[in-house]
Length: 516
Image (tube, rainbow, N blue to C red; front, side, top):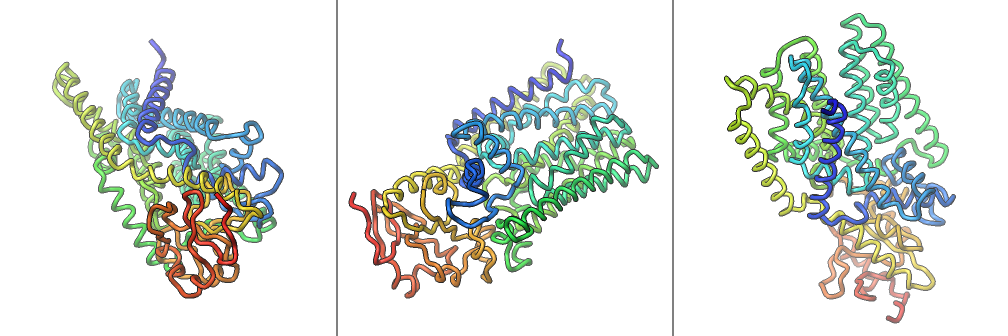
């Protein structure tokens, strides 16, 4: 019989492969989200020696949110011409190790609850299949969120062992390294690193464990040092302390941003699987033994939930489907949910008889089928994200026919940046410094309200791609983002509506469209 860690790792492998296959069948992802394409574009320019720029000849702008993920993308571009499938392979590895760490956490919880071997911890693996959005993000989106989750889970596993006084140097190294990497993995990672280091320091203070306090302080120093170094590099290279995406996304009304973040959290808890996950984790304190170790880890888990909600509620949530920012809660809470279910089954008079196993399996399969059926109906709110990137690459190839090249303005600026060879003006400001730093009414659309009329008309692009780009359809614009600009007299005096190879756009009146 395989030893538990090996068995758990193989469980993580087959769960990752199955979940990824099912989500691929539903979504048919090929090149990742449009936002992932932005990161890939910056990475390709860096690998070519062009610099951290959005397009060749453009300004220095940090339009990707994760410096560490951009670096990883850059390294892959040094090894491969196209990195979509290498990134998928990396996503499969990240998912496997994340699920494995989640299973190992469940094993620790079960052992603390009196289950010597934690033999049923592997059930956490199949439980991941109840959350299709996890595989869509970690494997197929090609975004940084999966890598960020893996670092958090590695830190939490190390923290769990350190809190139980397992002062192994490996645990200390993982915890300190994770703290240092989090701020580079995501801007908000510094807050997460600070919170986890604080929890370890409090435990060390209560238990009078110098080793715990020392590890916490080293981790915090490492986190501050890395973020400080990144900030200095940003000030030197870009002239600003934070990624340009921060300035473009943050609302000019903190109240509106907070309300949007609260609504984001409420919508997350509306979904049955998420509500069950949260509920089981919270009632674990009632079902599981109230030993000191379990109490400490339960409060750590509760602090992680509260911290995650506080951070992303304050940042206004997210506009992507399937709750990108709360995907970290899935591997964090599943060990507690499974531990509760296993404990309840073992409280029965004759634990896990044949009919009980049959009922449990039937209930799981019913939840699994209903969850994936619902995901298939709505595509998890993610299908459009893949199509936007594909559409953008197609448009870039068409617009390369213009000679000489013209400047274009667009909202979804990722896919097109991978194929278009001219100037691209990101109308949301994510990759346009003046637009991101402008005085504007950034309350209109969550995470996408960087547009400024003043900046737009100070340097109007040659061509504007509207929201609907098919010549067979009525031309519609993104007035919801562009603040009534396209319908204004000033815009109409500059631009006319035209089509080329089935692509509809607004183009400056003095410019001509190539002959088809």
